[in-house]
Structures are given as structure tokens and as C-alpha cells.
Length: 105
Image (tube, rainbow, N blue to C red; front, side, top):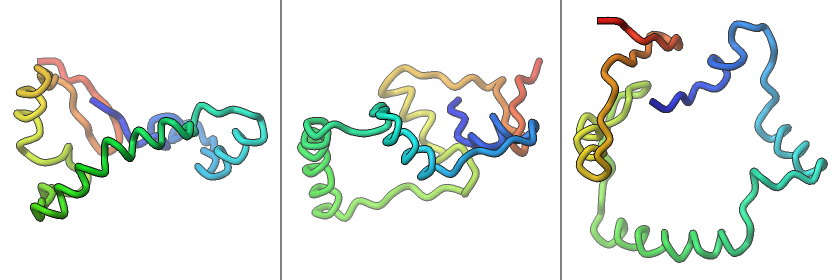
């Protein structure tokens, strides 16, 4: 499972603060770190890939699957990802109010 609540996972219990995202990026620029930035050739290639997708979405009036905020996503997601990649969700992984647990059966 992808843990996206960075603040609670890494900073919640320790009383330390997580710098604002823009502050971290500006600091990276000042330090000459380019890992969080896209090269111009990557950007051009990304637009070559996504422009036709965006045009198809507009042309066919594609609508996203609606799902509850804070949930794992659309209900059909597990079946779709299994079909496309063979991924099988670990049912033992449970998210409880910001706390990760691995339930034992």
C-alpha cells in the first residue's frame, strides 16, 4: 500500500515539524539539488504522451470514477490493477485513522 500521509507517518509522534513543500523546493534549488525537478527533455516527452490522452478525454467526455474522500479509491480499482499488472492487494494491511497496522488472523 502507498502511504501518502507523510506528516503523520514521519513527523506526527516526534513533535518535529515538516517544512512547507515550497520551502523544501527552494532550499533544494539553493543547494543545487535537481532530483525534484524535471529536465526539459522529460517535460517535452511527458506532453507528447499526455496530450493525446487529454484530447481523448475531452473528445469522448470521459468522467472519472467517483469515490469517498479518504478511501483507497474507486471500488473497481483492485480488479483493474490486478487485470493490468497482476497486483493482488494484501488484505492484512489495514489503515486506522492515520495508524498503519498489519492485522494478524
